[in-house]
Length: 398
Image (cartoon, rainbow, N blue to C red):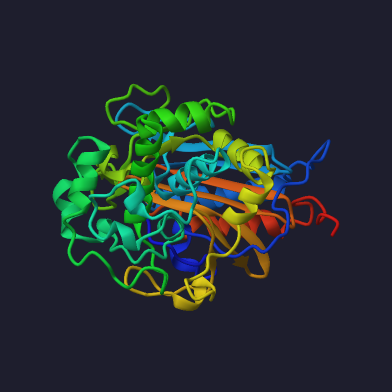
């Protein structure tokens, strides 16, 4: 699972997003969105071939959409090096912390149903969790809870391959010491712990496994046929294998270290395809999943308990201090003056980017099956696509 950083700091882009301030987030639809130009495609192809020639990525799947409609999609390289299986637009990748917006929507769907308030204390649902009365659901899904990031702890290294239940993992998280990096609500620091606990809250409220709830209540209603909370035991058609770059080895890569999806949970366990992620973004930002007021709450910059923007209280413990904002499971920002909303993700052997530029009505999805392969690369693809005079639709009327 990645660290959240601002895309304008060109080096660690993907694990996070930047700020978008809009009154009604969404994507305008066009009857016939302009195609991607041949020059843009050639530039993307050349950039991707360069990455693969340097053994920095076994392969990529890339989708470009305008107004929520795919105008370009292509697979590059290999999903399975050992068996020579090519990546296609249907290849399924783990997407790391892109999961966080799914988990946040899972929580907010319960808000829409009147079954939960984001101001509820964690103790209402997990009364035995240490200091649960100090933490709100809002703080957990905006990274303002102060909960120490478990993936930065020795605990994560010791249990990263272990399978179990969500509640067994919650018990393990309860042993992290110190539990807090700061007093809840007083600062902002990227923490996978809050999102894992959010998944556990969903289980407590619904009585369903997190994966089952997300499948039946979120993914299937949104029309996502290839998206799920992953399980390493699942047989998944067109699943990509995860790799680590190893230029000195004969193949140029090695198999990535296995990671239990139990341990990733609501913080980073999802799998998906480029097509599903385009459809998801269009449905979410188009107001088809949450009530308008709930979507507005999700995409509003987070605030600290004293009312200041969370961006005023960034703590650089696990990542460089960016200048962006964060909503609920989604980043809000600006890339070279271009409004942007979305998230990145990293988990062993995989890297993901899902970003929308609302003023251009352009969505860019880049999925890779090699660790670190999108952090520096997705901004390059965005520059290529958005520099084209024909890229995107005209800005929406105000």
